[in-house]
Image 1 (cartoon, one colour):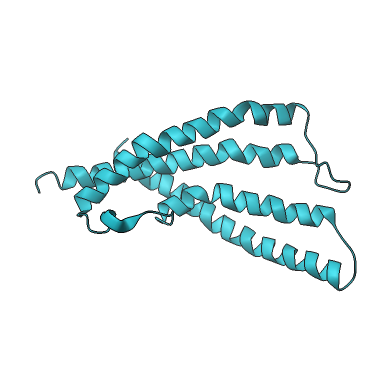
Image 2 (cartoon, one colour):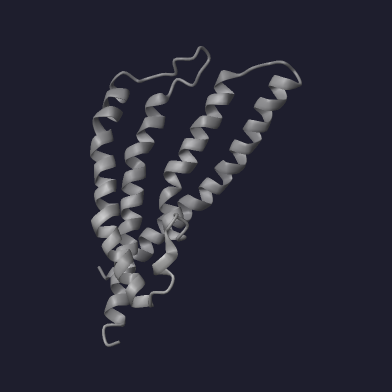
Length: 170
């Protein structure tokens, strides 16, 4: 399978995820407004609604990391990078992905695995009365984030490698 096909498929997955998360952001905002109105206008509190906002926020943050990487939206110190040629940027991006990002994703995945399995074993629920009885699902987002971010890192490395191959004569 050619490298361009691989990174395009991964990009499509990240793009689809990002678009779905945009709708979750809207839902989170609506729920947050509902929590505020219920509490301060009607003097009614809802732990499950508050936790739903937290669950949505965590989902958007963790599942949106790969989309943000695809959009080049992560924080970067551009003091030197912005002045590099396309080839220099490709070297930085590919080496950064290989040396830092992929190992970080692997570390997050492996360090969270037992944590998530244990949560599934006991079907962990909220400690709050009236809370969402699905903490184990929330914790499952941690290794999923690592996989998604690792896949997008692979796509970025392949894209940078293609730039290096195409500009090899320069």
